[in-house]
Image 1 (cartoon, helix red, strand yellow):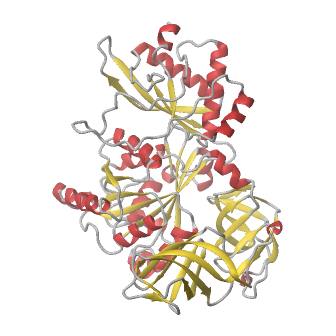
Image 2 (spheres, helix red, strand yellow):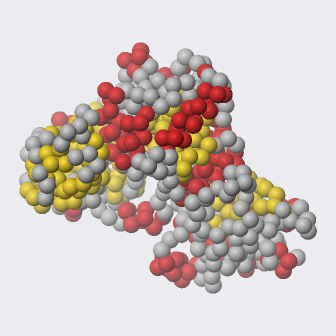
Image 3 (cartoon, helix red, strand yellow):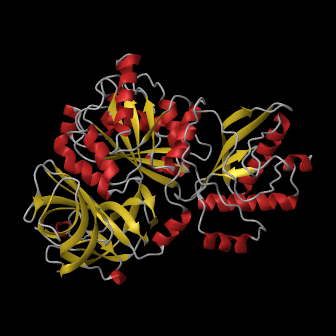
Length: 587
């Protein structure tokens, strides 16, 4: 039986592949004779005459893998468990397996008995490495010999000491599109009553409750355990209990939709480094207000974006279809060049999650209601399957660099002292670490000590690159701190500047962009007014043109990283670029 199954049974992993050198090191450590490479996703163009959810007859070929899943020998089982452990490391705790696929990518399927035996073996492998499996979907394939199936299985590590996979999703959309209500329904586990009850727990200020409009940046969490089940506040859980029970965490960054809070929205997009952006569009109003503005910002900052059409319970099917067609037309325009994908069933949600992370051109579109709960489960399936953009190797490279923490929020907490919130860009931060913070208005960096760390409202001893947290600084004087500062290792010897150069593209300007023009510059967590000192090689700039521009800050010096993304605006004027050098004039 083993020989028969070995001819047509293999496993494919959707975890991202590492570099050849990293794979070679892994071969030396784990001693398998053949190290599999994980399949890189194809762009997934639909064939004419085929439905979107039909499986293709072939999958992309990869290195030959002779994997026996039916009654493997002990040696073979250890080999398979080692490969699974390696793939989980590459996928940062997640891997998607496809069973019933030949080495050349042909979907031949397995019989019912062989499929059950293969899933049983995979479950034993997962238990050995401390993981759980979830059957995502099972399909029949055309075969003359017998009824055969292929299966797609998610393998996820059991949470260990808050080392869960954390994805940040920025929530964009026009005012009154239902952003906060949708987050309230997802994180609280209760449907809305149609009058905004679900969003009350997300508001931070009294005027937000009175007006029903978000004016600040708030954070909410949605967890998934190792079995793919939703973990939220529905069972009177605390944030600490959610973190302890979750293997994967979705951190929502709720941003303002009104135009007068646009600078706050831009700050949330540039400072908190979201992995993905969710654009919420009301079905009854369509593309209106700041919807186009927010879509343009996400695309300019190269944040992968997917769309949620909310409030489908307020209008008929024809109105919903009209809004979806409007979105498809906008996404297909030359400035966007996106491939819209309407998600209507669980299979579509799984496919959308995989293709969305693999191809920047695919844009999933969900239609749902926060009142009736229609299609809400499809969005949860999407979040559960959605893989991270960076692999473990990139994460390790960031962690090996010196510590750099961006200061985004500043608080004074009774009996604790000064607390700062932000994101650790690089390195590792531990309780008791001594760092320097700055630059101050006079260009200095001040010494301080990290007393304690809180992540997702629960205590944490170690903070790693890419994670957001709050740091308690004890009796450090709050008046010396401001948003836009950085806390770095004393070994870094940070350089600050008043003046810098950036290669930019002018997205829009009514007339000509020239020397002396003042704009608000956003670079990471830095937000300050700057003056255009000169345009290198040009006298003026018009919409769509590129140039290297020299900017000068007006108020105080800033710490900037070379290569950082830059976005500037003033009224209707908008532009993007990246920071090149700061050698024009150091402080």
